[in-house]
Image 1 (cartoon, rainbow, N blue to C red):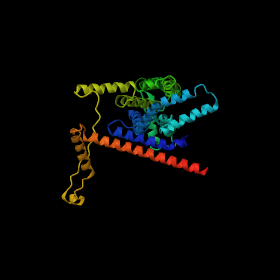
Image 2: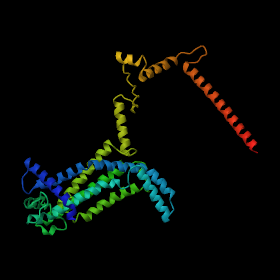
Image 3: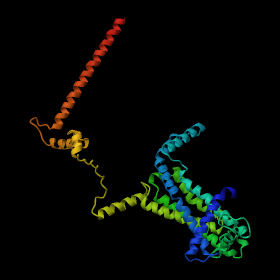
Amino acid sequence: MDTILFPIKWVISWIMYGIHTVLTTLGMSTGSGAAWVLSIVGLTIVIRFLSIPLFNKQIRAMRMGQELQPEIQKLQKKYKGRTDAVSRQRQQEEITALYKEHGTSPFASCFPALIQMPIFFSLFRILNNVNIISQGGEGIGAVDQQVATEIANSTLFGAPLSSSLGTASAYDLTTNVRVVAVILIVLMMATLFYSQKMIMTKNMPESSQDPDNPAYKMQKTMLYGMPIIYVFTGFAFQVGVLVYWLTSNFWNIGQQYWLITYNPTPGSPAYKKRQAKIRAKRIAAGLPPEEEPAEPVQPRIQPLGKERSKKAGGKKIPAQLQAEETTEKTTSSEIRGLDGLTDEERAQKRYERRMAERQRANEKKKARQQKAKQNKKNRNF
């Protein structure tokens, strides 16, 4: 695994080292200390900032999946009660074709989390090896023997960044390690639960909150299942990794808050609340409650110069012709002749007469053709 993750570990080591250098330049103490703790926080912010395009794709994929839920539910009702292999295969094929037609995938919303995992494990391996590197082992990127010693001796409230609940007994301040690790794990569970609850209660349309909806089931599973997973995984991860994970959860809460406030899912409670807020602002400003659609922009009539007028030979360009026709129609529609009709109504009547004459002519032509065909048939016998 170290061989596969080496390029990622190399990049992470240099990002942490660069952030640490910036912090010490701004006045923080060099060597071991809080600057290395904040460098992990800064690493999280840099990674999450660079993954914003992936977050946007995730949101689009989630919303597309929510829009497709009515169609998916129709397919599920279509194959309800059919437990044979052929029916299950056809149902899966039709659902896959539906996702493919709309350019998305049921797993598209999971891609950002999958991309986070190699970064997460790379940081885990770096912190796991800092003690070995500080004792003369092979370095990783910017983490040489001196840097590894500084990271190994850096602590968060007395708990070394490279320590974990599983290795707490190997450190002098065992109690500090256990207390800090447990607090971080509890905070991780609480922040993850809160961010998932925000999505389910505020940013999911009512049509998607059907208990039979697979997306709703998955969200509900994540709401209660993921925090429980932290109890078991948090035992093995170092304090520095827990800091990274907790910072990432806070970033998620911030992203969800922005999304729910300014770009909520259509049909969700947050969307209705935002629409009501916008409507109230428009009313307070003396505007109509709903924004009126913009009127179509009329094409600008380009005036002709002397030279272009001579070349055109007095002919009107299409824009001028269209403008004049519109003016003529407007004027003529207000003037009625002796017969009580406007020019438009007369033109409509002429058009109807011509269409009736053409229809009668076509019917006569078809009758002649049918008669000729019948006579030819009779002659053959």
